[in-house]
Image 1 (tube, rainbow, N blue to C red):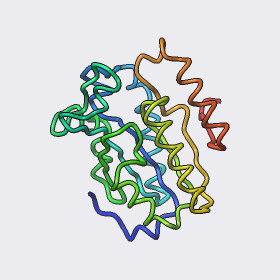
Image 2 (spheres, one colour; image 1 turned 180 degrees about the vertical axis):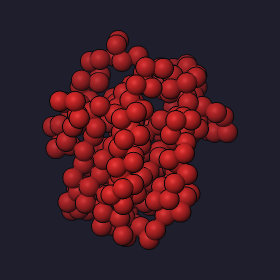
Image 3 (cartoon, rainbow, N blue to C red; image 1 turned 120 degrees about the vertical axis):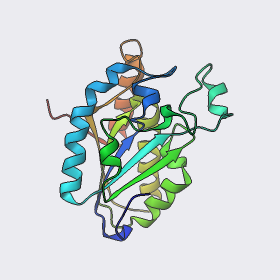
Length: 198
């Protein structure tokens, strides 16, 4: 965990989901096309720091015997202690900045990571959450939907925005229907999708 102020002072949060080597550079689930969203993510991370947001890097980090591997078939990836579970080199400098925290998750939803749940409970003045990262239809979708439901449960009014130009998934050319469905369901639940280029 990096230097973070009293969590109650933050009014904005940027979540960077699973921009790790295991999805971008190497391993059974990597797709080098995901690199295309990194420049936009860097812009948004810099903007978040300038605005005084807390920036949260969520890193897929699995136990050696994670049950997720069986559920999804032959997909052993991002095992704890391997390079696959590390943030990609282009974003690593930002992971070390002040007002930044890194959280490991062992599921497809960052809301199920105990450290993330603790963070959300303590950042009780958050008014805006933004999300970038991968994978659009799995970890981005599962995490942000869980977060929206959490805020609803506790009657917390928080605007949630997903940057459509800063999310991607592996094999997107053949999995487009899942990506489209995820975006449609996010919109249905009141999550804003924005794109700088539209």
